[in-house]
Length: 575
Image: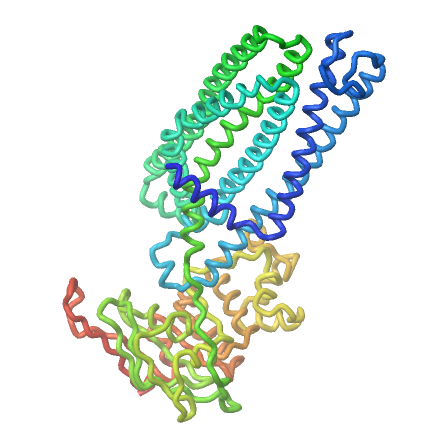
């Protein structure tokens, strides 16, 4: 357990940037100054609460011969310095915590953006949403707990140092306080870790229940499963409530144990010091004030250790996604040169997996300005095929020529890097129509945006809304239908002017006539773009120069280790 905790601490520290480490050093310095000022203020109380008696040192500052006014002024100055330094440290700590949360989200989001598609095959969108949102909040709380532990450690060291200065025999207090800290840090530790892990898992499940809620609601109501859905969500909420309550109960129980042990231990030390030969009353009061300052910090120590235990499962989840390898193939040694019209790409042989048995494709020509239709049964490998054609995943075998010159997959990927991929289930996440279109073409003018909307049949629809291009996508007053949202994404493709565009059932929400009209507009507006369209509708073949029909020569029930050979055959579409 200790090794695991140390590894967690080292892993958390590795997530800090150099700037964070520098500001953490400044935070430590401010905390040290605050601890010294606070300890000095405690000592300056001695001549005020025991007039006529002074500590056996520090005549200039702590002597009894100074007037009450001077003593009060010194106490006020030390207390003010303590408050100011603590405030400055708190501000710096808040800036560190806030920037740390931003850094964690940026890092994991960037890693997810660069991750290979295959690495995300087993990841749920709910878990990823949790990693990017609530899970990071738990990590930020853990980082804040580390800050608190720094403050506790510094304050304890300074207070014990001053206590040793006042009365060296009271060095006995140090091992007692260390023993109290170790004893209370172990109390309820195992249960705290189990509760924290369950809390992270339940939060992910709650994200799953909340995902794409309007669509799920229609599904639930059509099956008349409202009661079951309420019960399921209620059970998760109950477990989260129990976990949160139990965490607070563990904090309170640990605090009670710590305060009782600390009170007994410090009281015993005071009694021992009172009977220690040669111990004067002023020194005893000073030590009481110094050690009394540590009681609230000891409670904070207990809470910080519990918070770190809660951080462990959240950090493991975050770190699992940070270990994803970046999907970056090396750039070709020589730049890819294509003909002025874009170049004809002939794929002579390509093998794609999944599906498990593999998909063999041969003699496939990709010509700028032409449309290739891909069709076939669900689950037979269409999405895997277009992922490779879009350059997003590497095939097992790739033999191709560009304008009669051999080209490897790395060079092919570079060739189609300026592409566009629109899938059936993607919905715009931007706030307005303008923001959605400008996302694809940041420099596009309003006239160009409206032209693209007209090409996909959305200009008149937008004219019905008073805000026009600034119509909100997700408000009741400007809500677009599923088909209209698909048209909006296709307008992005027109604005993008890609080298290759993959439309994976991106027109499924349109009726047959509208689908043909939009695809015809895309062909007309994208004369230098190779269009690859995945569709179950045979009517799309009217617009296609070639069709790929993926077939299986075996029954669909074949499974296990049986060899399933899928073939892609090129045929004339308008024959």
